[in-house]
Image 1: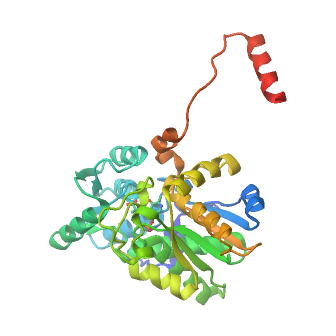
Image 2: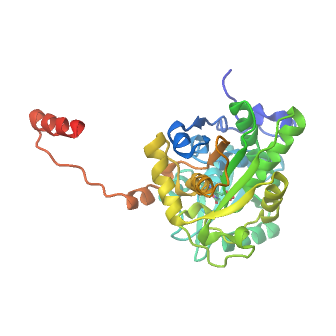
Image 3: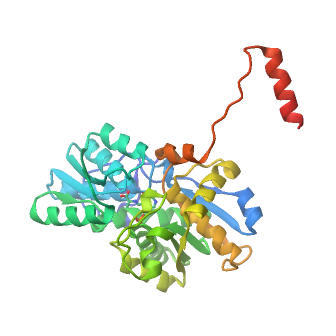
Length: 353
Ligand code: F0G
């Protein structure tokens, strides 16, 4: 049976009514990859839930399809969000599909190129501010209170409702609940949504609960430090957030699951960002690599037992942030004459060395 998208597939587990439009870009149903090479190196069973294969290339499509469908159901003609890039791409795409206006407010100079290109191509109204994500979020929250524009950041409860479906898929695809769910933490909506999803699936299907392991970037580690970070900074612009909106829900997920929230340095993020495509053929963006970086760090620290089944959420596609990839490498192709013999000679030396 062809996949029909989240609203159709999970109708019984979502706040969908007869009046909710059947909006869809066939989001969800993303692959859960087993990572044999990294599993062997780490002594665990490591899997990646690759959310980068959603229609706009990130997990945000799950929440946005619900938020935009409900906005339309409630008669709204425009949506607004603050974003580090992925939320805005998803909002712009679903608004375009639904024929309503999307307004996005982004921190100037801190949104990855691919994400900005998406917002432009999907036809969003783009406002850049001389400020960070947290300030942009504060702005759009106030604006949505004073106007008929619907706020579609994850403080809109329909966002977490849509995003919780990824937890259902993890349980179904793995055939059981993982021991640990490792996930990047920025505004803390996704960790909260997964935990809600695991609890609801447990209640309706009797599945077990995982331990939630969240990872913030060290330069933006508000929850770890238990203190707002006024000027968050990290190479992983997706999670460059110093005052997460779902802070309390994230702490609740950590406490209830017996998990942890830790931080990873930019060096750890970049090293995982490079490792995953080389070892497993999966290219995720830097913010996503925080989950892999966190798993490696916790295995080394002896905090993840040998043989544990770990699912790392790979929240966004690596193609969204080509600049960070290019900055990490020296692209230095060898120049050879346009001559078969010369190229063959070069290759023979290479494969036998
Ligand atoms: N990974 C990626 C690729 C993201 O874009 C985000 C958040 C996160 C992880 C963190 O998820 O905020 O639910 O804790 N991006 C938001 C945005 C803030 O505007 O696109 P979170």
